[in-house]
Image 1 (cartoon, rainbow, N blue to C red):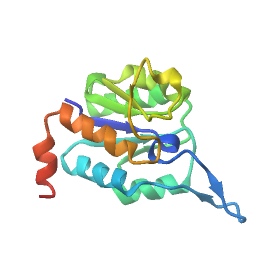
Image 2: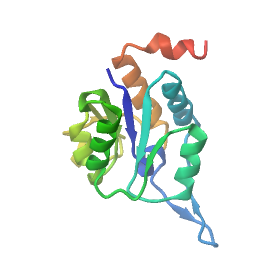
Image 3: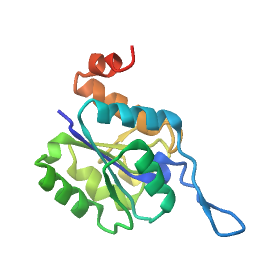
Image 4: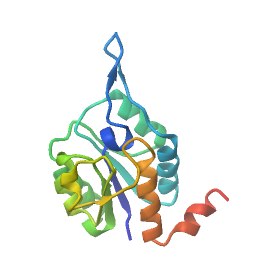
Length: 163
C-alpha cells in the first residue's frame, strides 16, 4: 500500500513556466484539481511531501494552503531527502509513489514503489516511471493520485469523503 506521495513542483504541480513581473515577483499556476485530491489524500490519513530543486515563496504558500506538512526546497539530491523522510516516518520505498518530470527526479523515481511522470516529462524517465496522460500543470497530480488510490483499493474511502 502506498502511504506517502512525493511531489515535484515545476513541471508537475505547475506547467513548468516561471513568470516574473516587472518587479521581479515570481508567478506560478497550480491546478485546483490537484489541490483537491492532495487534500483528500491527506484526509484519508496518508502523507504528502513536496521535494523541489528550486526555492519559492509561492511553493511555501501553496503547501501551507494545502496543509502539506513536509516541504523541501532547493534540493540537489531528491533521493537522499526522500530516503531520510521515509526513515523518519518509518515508511519503506515500496510504500511511496513519486512524480517528477526531469533528470533530477530520475534516482528518486527509480527508488520508489511507484514512479510517475507527466506526458511531457523527459523521455529519459520513461524506463523508471509510468507516463501519465496529462501534461505538467494540467491536473497530472490528480491523475497520479487517482491511480494510487485505485492501486490501494481505496476508491470507496476517497469517494466517502465527498459523497
